[in-house]
Image (cartoon, rainbow, N blue to C red; front, side, top):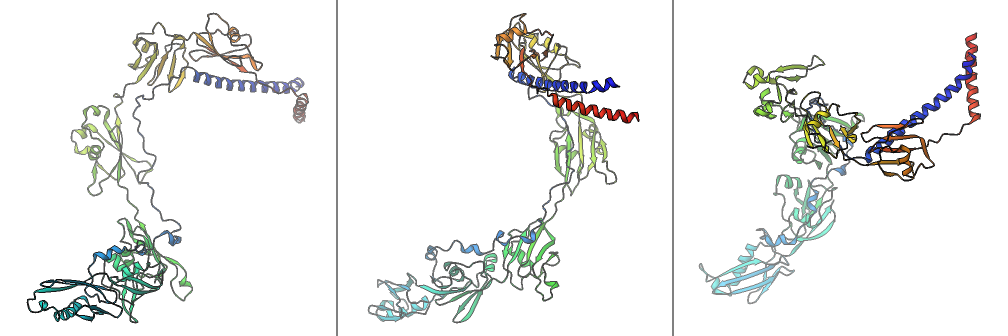
Length: 637
């Protein structure tokens, strides 16, 4: 017991030291070998290896899908994120050229500033242009003054004809020898006044053909605070008509878009309401709803519901009910069945959200040895048979492809609501091809069909031979247990220049260290037979890393000396040699390594160990002895 107490700490310390040294050495060897492999022949196995057909179920359960969910903040959508309907019509403005292409309205009354063109043709030829003065009259030579304001163009023509007949007799009679006609040239502008919620209130000069709509555009338009539903035309102190821009823009009604007269007043009141609608409507936005209008009117303003709108559950968020009762005046959310209650009354501040109907997933799936595996739409109206799905995914008419299919058994995987495991429904493809109706199973929505692969009709397994063989190329594996020796024999062996000790076999892009050519080959293997390199590579802690000529029977240290010898940091007791075929050997004390052609010598860096600390060692040893003494005393008691 005393001997054990004295020697145990020492052995514990020594074993820990050597364990750390071996671990560092193994890590260094692995890193060095990876570096050597990168610097040697950079040849990888081909990437176009024929792969076996591997089929698996999709990870997602059929029928699961992402659904469009209402955002948690639907009630708090800022108004500036949705457009105010109708106001963009004023953005472009009007071009003055549009008036030149329009005939004067039949009820246009002549007034100061209008230009009259008077023409006579026939026995009498005459053309004159007159502008009505501020007093409403024109002066014509030989005729005199004619008061012509405040009357339409046709009445003015009759009045002038009467006066011209007094001078030109050719205009008289039932069949006059001359004809008189008048037309308008330049027209006067009219002054109107815009009041209320307009961008530029005050008096505006507009074209005399202007209507409520065109006059509003010429005067700068209406801001979003102004109403588009009740534009009031005031003439001589009375409201002559009320114009609804919504009826004009949505329904194309122009009956109330009357022509403006000089001195008219357009009054734009504050918008009556601000109601928001979004979601599954064709034109979401912010609308102005009149007091007697309903949810049906709002949907019409928004161009109607989309096809996938959930009409049974339209959400309405109401800011305030408008009651004096405090409990009923707080905000609330209401769901409305639009089919049953389209006339639901709306009020200022309402926000309507149209949900999307959750779509049903109608799909069946087919996987395995079929030309176009995947998912296909399930016919919900007429149902779907197994053969219909197989025909959609490529069919069974290709006799060559049919050989790759296992015809004895296929499977339909069907979910079972009474069991956690699905129901397996087998079918015989041979009988299905021959027209057996019992094998042509009726499919259900979400069924999964599996077509197996013929295990005896697989793509050939291949091996690549490169380099110094007589017939390099691709070779198929012809029998079970075929070796590299068999493949080389079929390739007529090596060329005279082949470096057989440096043969490299790659599998899955990794180098296989082989002792001889009796190793079994696998699909995708690649064999490289190099030329004789005639050199040895020296790397690591030498003064000149590089290639040294290979000479038979030359020793390890002779190659190192030809590379300049060890550096001060070299560990000459741990030298690694990697041979051309991938084998690794460590030169340790009292061992001899025979250097072969194509080998790589790597001189490692000396591992710096911390100096021995006697004080720390003594302290640790005393602690260990004290611990064991305590245990010993406890056991003795």
